[in-house]
Length: 426
Image 1 (cartoon, rainbow, N blue to C red):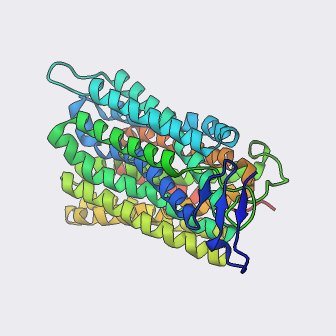
Image 2 (image 1 turned 135 degrees about the horizontal axis):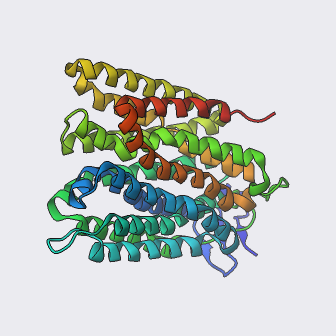
Image 3 (image 1 turned 90 degrees about the horizontal axis):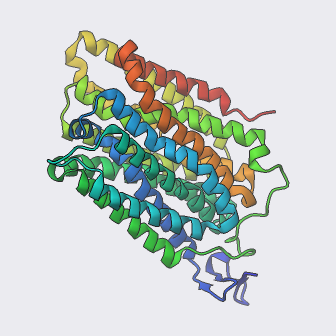
């Protein structure tokens, strides 16, 4: 069994030396290395699942796709994660976070390298939508390993009073990686093609796997506040209705967020006539703002113990922001002088609907208990990536029948419906 060794002078747990079951000694700040690994691994996969959609306009051109085929390909990337999240999470609770994270990141890097070699448009041939969609589906299936395993590691190494902050920092990796992907990948695809895009993503995943191999280990079992909390006496996550409700609310509030991440570039290009730099800068601004807000929200809710009220507030503000975007699109259709305001409103709505993830995942993990963190986080992320599957497929149909105002109005409705779902059941 693992132990925590402390000095005889009563030094604080922060200065404790952790000793693992294999005699491995951890320094007093090792938990921050674990957090760094969580950030790196999530950023690596975020650059993939959020960065590839940022190339949507170029992908549509390079692979000769229409909007429906583009939505199918991007949707299957999210479906792969949604299908694999729960099995990866259950496996994490049984195998441990180190094995699962190394397996998932290594396999993702290898598959992206294969895509860079075989699933890219060339002068000789252009991959069909079936091959592209299947390739992105497998990418999602492998990448689903990241969330539950990294979340379990962080919940194990941090105290209760730090977990909201730590998990929120980890969740900044999603907009950070997505922002870098949105900034780099469209220009890279335009200049060097999709072989360079998939190759760069493979390198990033491989580097994250190396860091995990080097520093990620199971935390000491007890003592010093570095260990995970005791296992809850409540029902397992898959039989806990409150865990299901919170997971469903998380997924529902992701619907409008995914609409921004996957089709904002197409919206700004097709409706507002914006170029690649404007669309990329808009998505980078969304991801940067979300990153800042996630860190702030984690610290704020740790201090005030108000995670559920904060989640409801985010739902309400998101609904108002997307309703405003809907009205602005209607007005800009009649008055083109309003078109330059659209990128700003997309940024506001995108930040509002992206600021809450670390808080929600901390609440979900706390509700499930330390023994079921991997399963609970993966259940929540299954709902998240179900939205990554359904939204890109649904948006082309909304465009066909309701045009862009219908897309943003539907986003506002989803955010509004999430508000009562976040209420704690009596």
